Image (cartoon, rainbow, N blue to C red; front, side, top):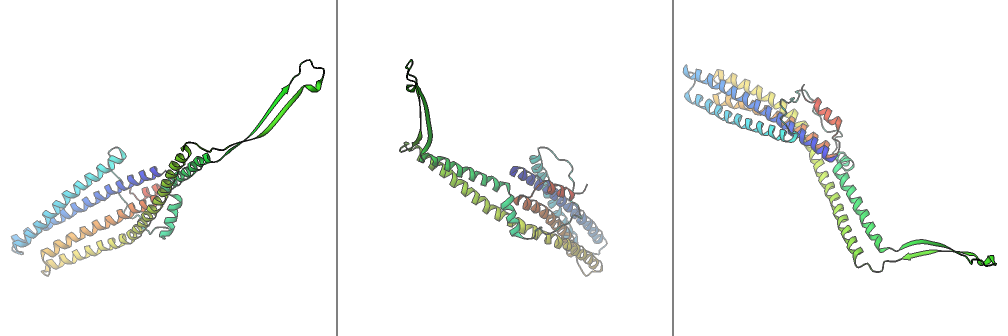
Length: 314
């Protein structure tokens, strides 16, 4: 079950990283198109003498930077698709995107200790480590049995036949019973060696359980904190997009009446697209960290996969 959950986690993370890369590229293209329009407007304004040549050069520089960023995002998307294909074994083609209206909430239960408790009880990796420890403990007991005496119950029956004797009493049956004990006084060190080897295995199994428990505790707490922070970060990033769009509109209006310059407009334009990328990243971070939290706590199952599918647009 551990490998199954890990596979679901790997596929989910790779899938949403492709969607993240697609959305980032779309934002980069939108930014490039907006800056290109701004450059064209600047050139027209320059031609009629409304602005200086430096404004046109500034717009061109911003556009060039945007083109470079878009090319980088294209490479990032190709890499994300390759990573996803390597996991599933083939090209997935068109992927369903993350819905705009999927609900972002804090983890339930909203308590890190509760999630750690679930992880200690349900995580399949820890369950396997505990099973191995039990087997190692039993192996030590079996080897230590070589030091203990063995006790057997023995019995025998014998008949005595005196042939043609006229005395019937001389034909008799003898029955004997007793307890036989064997004590291994010396075994050439075989038992000691076997016990020592089994003890090493037991100690290693105990250390593995402790190591997995510590790792799970840290991993689960980190995932819980990330999901909690992501749930608030998504709302904050969404508001930041609205604020950036309002700032852009105000800056453009100021530019039209001469109170703002072209640099202000270009910066405001890029701020809008940066805010949109941050918002998208916050949403995908939330989804991926939610899957990690459920996997860490041993809760990643069929119902969780159905819920993830519900977050995707048809």
